[in-house]
Length: 445
Image (cartoon, rainbow, N blue to C red):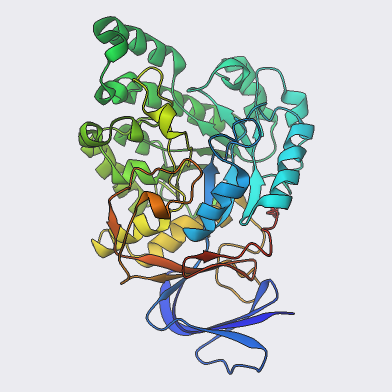
């Protein structure tokens, strides 16, 4: 059994930073101590000066496979993930075809077992007529149910109250929602299209996908969850108003309703549309500075529980279309951890809180078995961060298949130098080792 000894690390775990060593035996953490003696067969990594953090768990990604593999694949985006310190991901059902059956869900797990370099789970998708199929989901092996309550088309859009009540009242585990009110968006779209035609500036995107659209849908979802006692997780909060829907008086383990913030809503605001245009066109939209600031505040005071990416790559050609043809979404997973470390350098957040929101809390919230913490007996999902190793994002070092990033030209002060996935050194000093694949996440439910 392979063993690795990480020495002299600044270990970040459960609200503390302390210097010590970590011994990995096989795929798990064997021992944590102030000084562990190396054995002859140990591979030793001297982490002097670097932070050792639990691998990030990204609870919202779109890796585009099957059906949209010209944009991305599970293989390509998992490479970007491990290079960025993300050791586990949960992927969404809006692939082609959408994941509305257990057979289609199983197909995605088969692809990941062959190609994913990171640990993985996949959401079952809700449609307007698949409740019986959804209820066949094994919630110990599947992260949850995803419902698009807006920003989708065809059967993926589920915004009928009666149908939603069926899912909220009967699904026995976590429901994750995209909340934007479709009727409000359609009304706003018609008004702006009449005014500007096909040449509408992207700066009006947050007025089309408005605060009203977000709050109306989010508050409706919260109301349903309270009515039926549903375990609800609302994704990518984008407005100040929505943050007031969430409680920070309970420990996370006791919360029935939780929320996520995404990197782009923390990093960008509406002043960036002029510079970056369609490259920061996301749904829900990036909005005002005041929204950006309040989301960050809610993250720190525990109204918002998790940091994720909503990594959703499109080709450069697709993104260079005019507003109504340019798709929403962009690649972020390779840069999420170093982007949050930039806030650490700005003294806006502690490295302990970054670990909490990107590793501990997703593990608690989804009840992931034996991951998300640096604990003896847990899987060795670990990341070394050199907080004083600047690098610039350029096309040549972007690993997402789409080949671009909204961070191009940006210099990050921190670098991910090593990433272990279930004990396997998947990334080290710029090189990816594909010898071992990631593992399927299991849930203690």
